[in-house]
Every structure is written in C-alpha cells, then in structure tokens.
Length: 317
Image 1 (cartoon, rainbow, N blue to C red):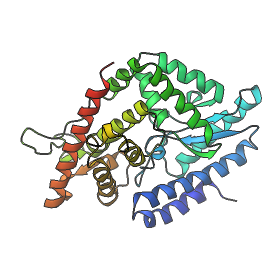
Image 2: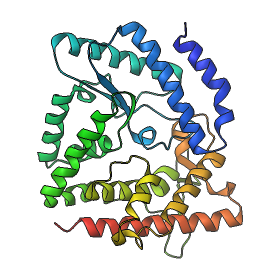
Image 3: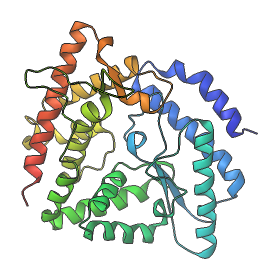
Image 4: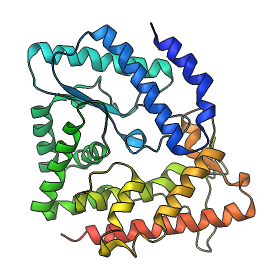
C-alpha cells in the first residue's frame, strides 16, 4: 500500500531521469498525481458519482518544470449533501497529498480543497456564468485559469463542455473580449532601448531575469486569448499554436512562435534546475553563452511583439 511518503521518495529518485524533454517530464508529473489520487481515495472512500479531477496552470498546459506548485479542481456529476461532503473530503486530501509529495500549496488557493474550485457540473455552469457577467479583473483571471484546465482523472468531457460555455459566450458577446485583453495587457518588459536584456537590479534575484513573466507569459497569455476568441479547446500552448496557425488570419502573427516556445521549454529544462519553486522563475543571463544570449533576446522580442499584436487585435469591441 503506497503512502504519500513512499510516493515522495519514488518521485525524488526518478524525476531526474525524466529531464531529457518537457513531454517526458510532464508525463511523469501526471503519473505522480495519479498516485496521489489513488491514496486520497483510500481516505475519502468510493466516489458516490461520476467526476473529473482537473489540473490547470502549467500542469494543465503540460508545461511544468522540475518543480511545480498546485493548480487543480474538481467537477462532479450532481450536488447533494452526500456528494458535497465526499468531494470536500477528497479535495482536502488531494491538496494535502500533493503538498506532501513535493507540490507546494497554490498561493492563489486554486486547489480542490477550496469550494470555489470543487463544484458539481451545474454549480460550475452557474459559476462560469457569474464570472462571465462580472466586469471585475479577478473574475476574468479565474476564467483564464479555468480555460487551461485539463482533465487528469475521471470523466474527460466535463471540462471540455464547461470551457465551451466560455467560448460560446464570447462568440455571442464579442464585446466581452476586451475585458480578457485588459486582464493580460501589462507584461514585464525586459528589453532595453538599445536591445539589451534588463535584469533585476535589487533583491535576492539581482542580475537575473524573471523568466516566467518576461519570457513565458507573453506567449502563454497571448495564445490563450486567441484560443478563447477562436474556440480552440486545447490546453497546451504548442497545440493551440498549431491549431491557430491553420487559420489564415494568424499565420503571420504566430510566425516562429512554435519554434520560440519549444526553445523556451528547452532552456528552462537545462538552465533552471533549482531546488526552490520561486527560484525556477529566474534565469541568470550570465549562464548563457553568446549564442544563447542572442537567441534569448530574439525570443523575448518576438514574445513582446506577439503580445502587443494580440492585445491590439482583441482590445477592439
């Protein structure tokens, strides 16, 4: 009988052998999380109805690095006193178990232990409707988080059906799209006036560039927004790019984006093998050789250009 402790030991022994590429590493993360679910269910008991456990964030997009925090939720078939109590117990246990095996608690509380992220299918429909009608910044942020949801365990159709609600609402109410655009409008600019990379000037990461916010998120956020606009339900940024480039409108806009994003994933694998979750967001550019440095500048510039073009396109109601 496995325990969270035995899963943690197995994970720590095995994970370094999966660092050859992002696909292998994310398959391994999925395996670890499946093991956590198996143990959590021994505590919670037999599920009383159909459900899905989904992960979101980098896990939902299959873009996790060596260290990743928690981002997950539950959709279950219907609400009743018995079902609500069961999935509250299961959600609490999943968050506890993931933390025990090495996935830190989500600082934003996007976890199955939070009732906001553990609901019946009907309650989720109502929740999405409320967020779509809400003009607040936080509601749009939650919608974008949910749009990255990927079913990891259980019924695979629930998340797809729910994400379709978001796309259909945007299709019928295109004036909503600028609210999504405004939510991701600002990015961390790390390209100086003469093309140099701007690094952190103070604090523990002095001399580093924030790799997550300066490099990854301009691509992730821009491609996600186009996917919401066009009804592309894939979660992986690379798969989203692949589908979007089949549409003539985006071929030029997304030129080199697939190549750039693959290179970003590779750089993270070889340059950001840190032991602390926050550390994995920062890249010391002194670790780059001359060719890597020039390549990184190009990727950062392309990401900024893509982000700007998508914001301009989607800001018009």
